[in-house]
Image (cartoon, rainbow, N blue to C red; front, top):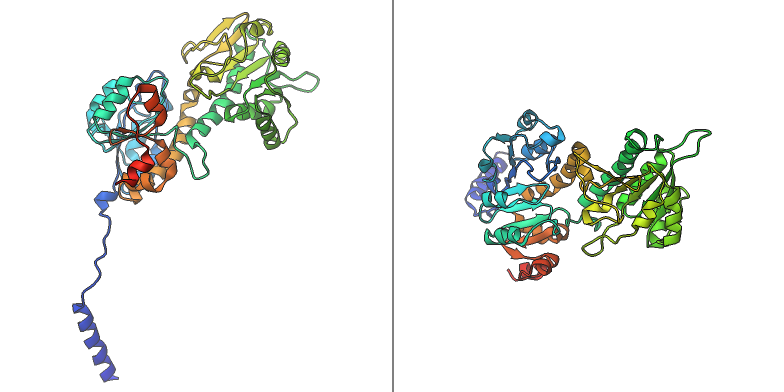
Length: 406
């Protein structure tokens, strides 16, 4: 027994002097993200990219978050909530832009780009239709790597942020219509829906995408009678099967659409553009034959609108009346319910940010995840989005090929 103990001790001493494989670990400092969350400066942009709860998750995973004072005010999140979640509240915006990753909802303004550091990472919307060439030139000159959340895809090939905002816009459009139909001066003083012995409200929805789907669900939930139009019979069939209720559906046939609008109390425009502008589906003549006090909510207005009579309005003055019909043309409907929208954004952003941290650097995530790579429109100052390149005549490089070369 004693001999075996001595033998074990001898082996232990020998093992201590044997060369060992060196384990290469990612340093904690490399895994730490430094995230800057500035206050949104775009007109009536009330959403915020991270909620206090989301900040708490990031901080508990070893990341550092700087939040500009009142960044969450538009969504009813207080500085105190962010501070308690572990963020540093910055009263000088320059301090926020010291972070290596800037996280925003709207694209940065020219003044905000001036505050950015060379080689920073930016996550925000792209919005080609609202941003000038000068914006992108400044980002290129600063060698920014920029990811558009509206182009980010999940594992199933879905654009999760676009879908989430579409769900919100579709549901909210019916709630807005209900308010205008019943309470607004000049409205029909009726409810969206129906009760026993009273005919239900007639709702026409143009477009069977995500916005149209959730507008349909909300209208049916309130008891309205819905007629749904789309150019694709596949989309109409899919939506009818998904909802599980027999809907009145039709492709874009002007005579049928005009007849439906004559009887409609509410019309929702939910068509998305294939090119730069939404096609104009409803003519002014069609609108002129609608009921006095009926309501149009044109969710497509951010891409030009699918009603000929629609015009862009804002949250302060959202209504215009034409031919006796109430028009709602606010382009950013999700900002009307900014707290809900901010939570939806945070649910999508946090897992992506945690992936950035786990892999130790941004390049590893961009290489590994095609969905994230799909959202990259600038890589170290090089334009990697073909639409951006064609719109503003910048040299273009395919990101897959570009990264494979290095």
